[in-house]
Length: 202
Image (cartoon, rainbow, N blue to C red; front, side, top):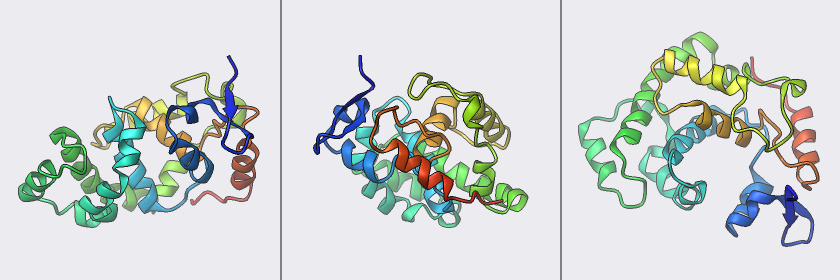
């Protein structure tokens, strides 16, 4: 089976885009392009944790609702959430009302302070786990890579929750640490070019 399918313009895209019409836009505009902004990185880690056991289509459809409910994923504000905020979020039909995942976001926001004190930024921390291209398998053939397992273990040691290896790998794919666009996908070279012009924070 081919790893690509024709997109709306007839050009090849990663096969997973065929799962939902809105995936083509997400794939073309966001997925796999390097991100160095702490707020976007924190948001994505949170959204990937909400995806656990669900489909990305569900999360993507609710993304704006999540942003509104969690103060734009401003971790300084989320870290101050209390029981009333948890109750508010559990009553919000626009997001995934899972107490464990909601409390994990609040917990992880509170853990950001120590991480930032040590690394300067979430971006510097995240990009320190970027794997070398020669250490990667063929695109879209592996669900876990050593770098994602290593980041997952370290985050858990720091007290973060809902950051298992699969969640972290999906995060790395989306945020451009891994160019997992299928070979032949029209966006693979674009992702590579953007990475070549991107300087990871240190």
